[in-house]
Length: 398
Image (cartoon, rainbow, N blue to C red; front, side, top):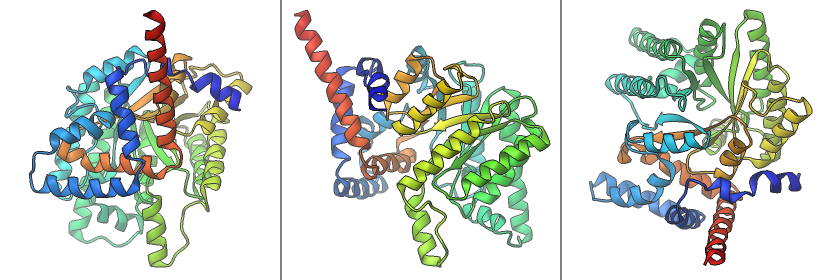
């Protein structure tokens, strides 16, 4: 396994082919800084306060975390990065990453902005996918009541009808524009409402190919059984199943809520159990590729290597249309670019939006790199290796 990893992911010349020396050094110091949990926590509070007080800090945020993890303030402004990724055979999943909407007007605005993002991508081969977060088009509390099968008031019934209409409009528009649409997963206690909407949409729209793609978070110990249920349902109802498989994004919130309310946590017991659950989900989906499309959203090298080995064992081509790999923009370029260089299907999740509005997303990326063991260290190791390689190349040329 180590030799395979060396052969596949250690080529930093390929990994950082789009990065200038300046961009690499900026990334190096950013990952150095966000290794420090205390510094990230203090920076988060200071930045929140500065933005709330309308202090002129947007330039600093843009020059650091924004330029590392976001592509621009709009879909149009993001196109230079999208084009550069396309030249490396990596497609982009543009995501309007604004959060915290809480009003009907805000939900309608999110719907229109998501549709506008999709329209900007329509017909562009660098944009085969689009994405949206369900709670951007409806109240979290409403999803929670529907998920728990609580009785809705007449006003809530009207609001839920509007959520369903927005959801259906996004799905139908994606199909009309021939784009595949990811529906993000969210917290476990609202996920049943999301699952029901996505399953209905897949049955309606995926008779010919997987236009609508659900997201399954494998840090939940019940999700392997859910995947089996989805596969059986796809076979029984004759639709294609699209699954974006991820580990998950809300583990601390999930465990804290379970402890506070006194119910068993839906999370796997530990990281090893999560990894095993994730890899089992990958193997299950690959066993049903005639009816299933797998989009592996992962920064975990070992899991990716296991999928590559599985593809090789099954004699599947590197560019099999039902197997895709995805990573976040600004992270794990050694995975994305080296996979694409070898002909695998690769997408980058590319967030954009006004700096103030995407700040919660940027904080999550910083916290993720702080909390995930080895993530920042791996980035630093590879950036240092590439900077040294470039310096040595210059010395030889001189």
